[in-house]
Length: 286
Image (cartoon, rainbow, N blue to C red; front, side, top):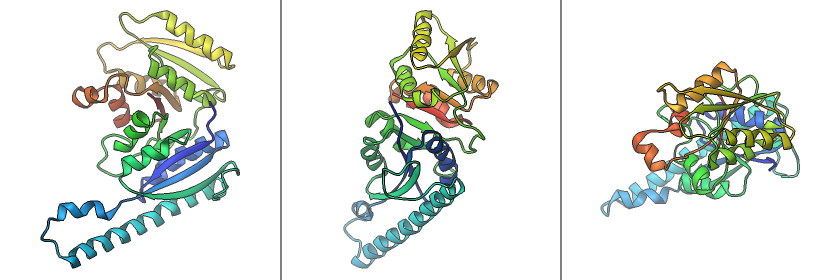
């Protein structure tokens, strides 16, 4: 697949800059179109929680305050996109045929639903930390894009890497999710200077799956170097990030939610660990 349309949810907070820097690195590398998406909350959705005793004036004040808050947030989001795009000499234009470039759009509704709908017609969705209290990058919006819309997502660390997708690590376990991630990452893999296929030794895993990946990469002109390691009782997500750091990787490619999301919510899992701890960009697919 090719990646020419990149969607980035923006919130009008200081964290927009972090996600934009990683997203723009991908945009420049692939000569793509970056579209910043601002989701304007619908103030009418809060009305049922006010109760029947709420006065007309109270309702009007709440609606006005919500609109004004959203207006300010949109201005900040657009300002961040415009500034970061200017730094890379990328034009802000609505014309989708002009590449590489950036544009801004806004929609009203519940954020996770709007992002899911918008994700269906894009090639990659980039998420970063949204606020100080985020425990996992992207929140419900990321889950909607990855699981409901079925699109690959890119996790942007709080501090953007100096380079992007030049030294790539593939977290490979032979799963369907990992295979989808490799296919989605192919535009980046073709440009990478070095690719490491990282396999964590687990009982019952076949070496044939690793050989098959090597052959698949070779048909696309990519050469991957295998690295086999033992988890030694450590969580798989921790091992992936530690080894990626040792390799000085600037992109980790892996499957997302190989186990059910409910299971990960209750017991924890690889995807949750990565979303909460990564310091490098991570491309995931389900």
